[in-house]
Image 1: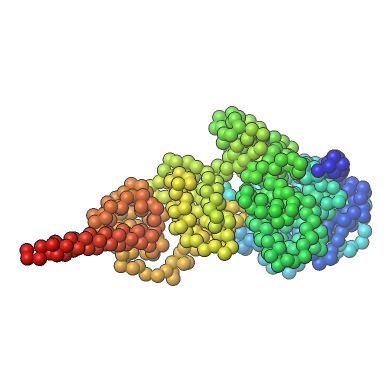
Image 2 (image 1 turned 60 degrees about the vertical axis):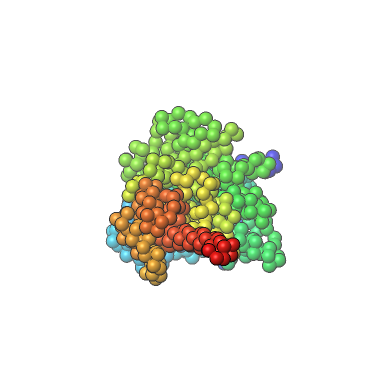
Length: 634
């Protein structure tokens, strides 16, 4: 990164920010670079900064004609794409935009809208659900007329004055975003003009963005990663941004060829798909003209193996960062070259002041895990209408992020997981991160997610979901067996599910405490077609049921998941040994906890015992024959 690019990035991201409102910032950008490209989209739409400013001004007049202005809360519910980008910018500049996920079920959308305290709802013409929900809430229904925004008459400089609206102030709320719900029901996060402009400027400076850069926006704009990191940050630098309808593997490479972006930002789930696209293109010897200066990653931890693969395939550095909705996305990030990037780390503080503290709020030394707390201009002041949540969210002026991590000696931050995700298995506490890293070290595993599940005697147990590398077919039990000796026995998942993909939220975040529900639903659906028991499996199933007091209906039912633990496993081994005359240990039940797996273990032990008996009998018979041969007359 050259000194000239750094200076240019600092000048660009600072331009227009002095006014500290989105409208004044955008107007100053339009005055400074009126003809520079701002927004582009597949399908041919392209807006310069002057044109973008005009669209936003016309939209403001349109909103004012409906009696909506500063202080009005407008729920924006539109599909991914340039229309959503324009709507959020326009509403954010003149009122307060409450960003909703248009892909939610009707009941989910109704619940969020009821909680949003909205005065109006903006949606596409013909969206009957939005119209119905607006009527139910007794609020104004607005049908987006994008053509009028794009090609209407020049904005009237006196129109807003005629309506008597002064416009938002720097500390007014520009956007209200909902948290991803990883630790409970979604909460409303108000982001002020000052806060989002500070965060966008920080990201632009950190990534040395200039007018020569072009970002490819793939993330949903109703989350801060897409809104601030993907849309506002490039605009803060005076560069252009391509507003896609969301990630689509079939179109991604064509977007690269058409728009020649210099960077994109996404969650690891998208990065993995992008790496696969690059690998397949190389295999086909397809024309390859990547223009990426760097790739940015956020929303969840990126496996080091994926980072290295992505860098190799795209010949561009991957910049992993860390943030959350409450900080308008970024609080830490790895630096661009020639700065040092550390795989597995989210980098250095970049946007907020960060500390790692113990339960008493004392700073932890390098290498020691603790709670991550933050403060600074990008950090919000509290959730809306949530006094109980706010009481626990701040400590002595520091926001308690809910994440646990540690700093190394160089000041790089490593995240080990959410505090709410820490698993307490019979008093042994550990982070899902430990289990996931052990699984990812297995050569066949491409993705892994460990999560806590309720357990009747241990309180919690650990399960895991994995996605295998393409072309690999490994049974879940084999994966589980491979973990023994690599991590502590109490961290080994009682059950591993092999999936085609691990479900995440729309923003790419893993919701661990909802994984168990999803896995249980899938298991219930699959059990309807489950095969019957073999004779020995039926006996094992009766043993499981008798010891645990739970019904056992499938060969895949799991002793540990049904409530078994090390003590009941010892009783199980004793019963089996008495019944079959074997010498199995309790660890055998823990290593093969399903009905089918444990039955196979018993059958193998019986077969071994039978084989040994046959050998012994053969030796006895041979000795008898030898005695007869030596003493024929006896």
